[in-house]
Length: 560
Image 1 (cartoon, rainbow, N blue to C red):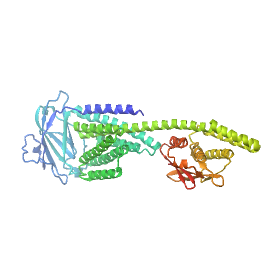
Image 2 (image 1 turned 90 degrees about the horizontal axis):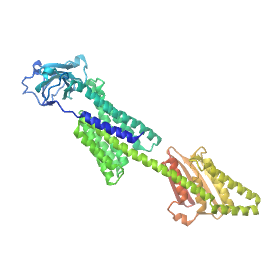
Image 3 (image 1 turned 120 degrees about the vertical axis):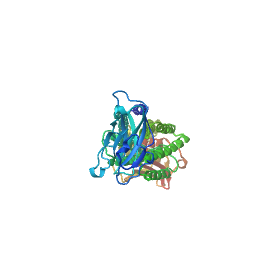
Image 4 (image 1 turned 135 degrees about the vertical axis):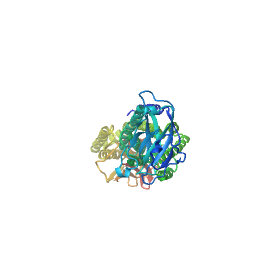
């Protein structure tokens, strides 16, 4: 996936969407008045409604109620392009414009008898002779049997063609967003499955997927007719998705910009978010707004901390948060929240791209270092000093005991042959590494005339290991150790495994030279071991090397 190309694509889509959403209004909506009851005269334009309530009606059992809203038309429609009205109302209703019935959605007052009818979003044409510039009266006769505590109304007036196409265009843009983030979700999920310790990738993947589902839940009413009786399920789904996204985004930033007492912070944040989710839960749009605001505040605080600590990418995240806030001031919440989330997710996307780039560079550096150290180690085994000492010892053995001299030559040839087999491999069977160690001990016995012994315990011979790391630890044990009183140095390799990790413990039983006990910096050999472990297992390993009572102890842990 080309991350830069995807980012450019999403940014261009955002700009197009903002442009598409900006329109000049053609009407002014005034104070809506309401009254419980049912009289046909209440639809007329000149009805005296001075004693009607300015507050929303308080309903209990699906009774009929009326609303009256004065509306000023600011400009007359063009010929062949009539105005239309789209109410956003919970319930079933009839729409009257200047006393004329222009549309019906369901059966107000008869919901209990006839069952659910109608849709959440409907559009009604206003007769052309009733759309002259000036004041008009919108009267709506409605009932809300299923959710009587959700009384409310909002209307849009525009050209009929615009009302039909505007929502479709808006939905198409938003679904482009949804598809892009769905692809990103799948891509980073597979990346996480390849390296299951990269939790920021998993968090980002889940966030993108939740954003995708939230987008579908918001705009599904454009092409799927939903009755208001089932609309509450949609709102509950949106609120639950908002809760998930609002928790995951600060969690992601806390992973990228770690700070002290992070667990306490996240637990406190989760409690605040849960409280916000359940308080006034019936007003789900209000709940979603508050959760988005709390998410923004906590994320902004984390970004400020990252800037204070000079963490890479923190400044960009702060800018994306500020831009997302600005957009929500410019356009409506229903669209602004998606554009704002998109910008924040792009910032998260950028942080992941930085992380992936750093991991790639670190891996390439480890390969170069591993190659350099491997060559240095090979050079060490064939350097003139090693060869001269070995050949001198070989001459002595041939002169004194020709048969042992021949065995010495065979052991030397065997070690070089094993080195030749494993030098360019990343992982080799543990049996091959042990054979290399035994061969080296055989050579050193001839060279130093010290008794070396090798033991291993619990070895599973189908296991693999980076080549030369045990051989390197063995060389360190020989070089930096003195034999015990019986002229012996013993080595022991212990293998253990469980569900979490595999462990190799390499023990040296000898008198350790004091200089080695006090030495803290890694030599070439230990650098080689660490580079090889990084090359094969990235960060999923642990290596310790320390003196003990009997000599020296090296432990390698490889995590699952």
